[in-house]
Image (tube, rainbow over all chains, first blue to last red; front, side, top):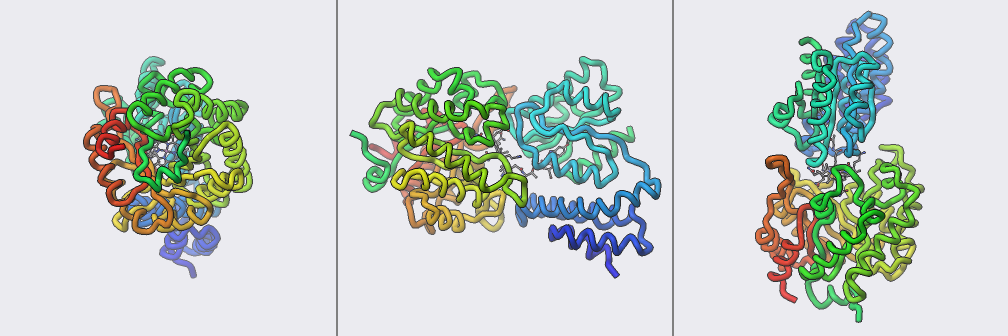
Length: 211
Length: 293
Ligand code: B1M
């Protein structure tokens, strides 16, 4: 009999086969799929994020853990849908114009999908209007932007401004993240939210959607 | 007459140049635009920067080819200008500085993760580095500078590829480290001793570090390299991490503080010193004053 603990450990080790196996074993038992997600997968990724921030582990470990989480999600997702666990909403994600760093943004994407969001991932080097048009197309409530360069973080201000110009701020909320950013910067440019890591990003987006 | 890098290192500390990307940004390169664009569009500005570094006392000048591997250029949709960007990158610096100054041709990371972690095919990455090195050497580079690497496998592929093009050319292999509670590691988890050993045996004639968080952090990295390296050590820190002040970028390290810290590293056995992002001809001039001729 597999336990939540074993699943969490498999994800943290980055062992996709074990994570998928443990999930399959668990879904036959009496723990519901939402509990498997909330009590094993998401906490495991939170531990990974924290250990990476402290550099106890490195980028390859983080990427492997994200891959193991995805493998577990592939087992869980149909069951979550079957149980009618409501989709949390649509989020448009991208790295801003001029910036090619997409690893952090991809982690945010994995975590959001884990938390039940449909993610429209625009990739990197994304222009202000492309963010907005994609959000309108997909009927997304939130635009998430990532930037890793001090020179491109100002692009985020341009996107926020563009949303205002197009008169869409009552429809579209923005959240920003990336290593050089801070809460203060997010406030200064008028973004609706900031998250220091992928786990926090899920929480902040949940708050934004609720508002 | 031109004196080789090896002869210069045998005679004393070699002073290289400082940052390029930040110098270009200051002169109007739009945020996010690839610096290699100006090799095609504004060669006179590259020549001016190269001469400013020589006037400041640099003996070795870097080319504007850091992002000119085929994979990296194609991220910027400049893949079709690959040959021209690399060849002209060397030619512009050579024409600006003459024959006695060393031209160090920069080779940066592809920007992709190697399989199986990512989807870049190691054989294709290796071919790309070899092609780039071949053009740079044919155009007259004296040194190949493989820099800002974080993945030891990618760095090793680049060094081997460069060595396969020329048996005698000097190769600098330089990685970027974070300071962790357990000492310096790259974001991919490579230690200084792993880097020093692996890159030297792959064919690098200098090993070391560039970029990073600033001179304080680099002091720790430099010390670790000097302790373990079997070949000369190259250290090129940036002027700290940039901060935004009233809308403009400010690098915290002044020329004097930068020069004092880097000269201290040279005194402990580093062979080649210079600067990375945020350093300017003023930083290199201050460094040259402390090191002497
Ligand atoms: C939507 O809401 C949200 C919420 C939270 C969000 C979010 C969005 N986005 C992120 N988060 C948060 O959650 C994530 C998970 O917890 C976190 O994401 P992070 O992205 O912070 O963390 C990732 C999980 C791991 N971190 C990373 O992936 C970044 C690692 C480092 C090594 C890095 C890499 C890998 C690269 N680089 Co670049 N690179 C560096 C980085 C140095 C370092 N050691 O950190 C940094 C960021 N790079 C830098 C530089 C200068 C550059 N890079 C460049 C290029 C590259 C590569 C292409 C080689 C590669 C990117 C590969 C890729 N596909 O992403 C160049 C720029 C290219 C461009 N136009 O974008 C170039 C300009 C170098 C050059 N001279 O060409 C520096 C930035 C300095 C600054 N503050 O401006 C840098 C700090 C290195 C340094 N020490 O100087 C949080 O921030």
